[in-house]
Length: 384
Image (cartoon, rainbow, N blue to C red; front, side):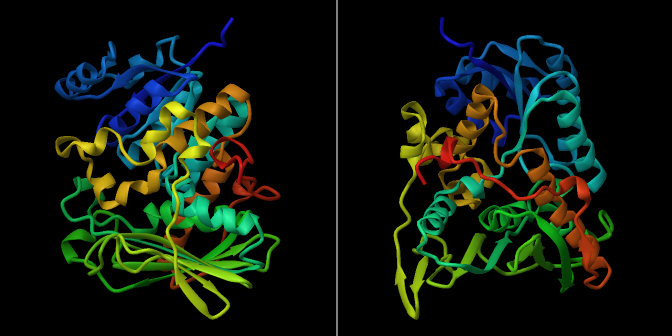
């Protein structure tokens, strides 16, 4: 008898629609239901992908006993509430970033996971991008030597995005630069210190009472001599879109390209060399391997702005699905799990608090700390 497939419901069909065909082809998943408040959009997507179970009401969806897991792709202010509702309704949760917008919300999600025994995974794209998998492979092979310093940045102009983004504190959406440095370090962040710089348009400031154009945070890792620096900007800063990380080792260092579509550089000693980062589709089940380089976003009419600006998110989408579903099937923790997701998310939340206090050093709360991070040597990270 074949094992039961995981029935998945996707909540939010803007960016969320990118994942529908991946779940449809994933061997252990059944793309069961979709949810969107706009019924016209709901039916358009449902008809396009042949999905018959449709909901305009999230609370009604959670009453459906056939749903095993929800994948949440809604505005960031809804993530915590919807994750908590799903866990309390007995559903596993995959949620797009960030986990939440407050430390208390992160604490509640971690507590709910412990209480229910269910699985939570924050779907952080960068830690499953081909660039991260490449650097992780170099590190685990010993080619980088000892890690000496990590740096990451996420610079993006959010003008024209939905109104809830306007004036958002830069570090409140920092997981794309915090995630890779924390993951590669293999340790949780212990404390942060952050400075704000510059000033956004006056009209943008009142919504979040956040004046800074750029926020730059230093992270100290627990039980380690390693530190990292992350930089984030959202408005009024002239820069091509860039999600990047640099890794400095004693033997080799990796530096992200300065301009999109250029190759990154690997330094061996003092010798720099541009390198082609390979694709890592071979780590995935064959039916979803093609989604590292293509998918629903191929058609101009279907392209989502986050995918266009994000250069395809480094081919991470099928790796995220594989990491989540394989963890459920194999009854193990995904990366990042609830506690790890809280550590990554709280770095950004507390970094902004630090910036508002002139760079005050702020410790990460105890509920985000564990002895060390452990990216599983399976799922998308197998064979590295």
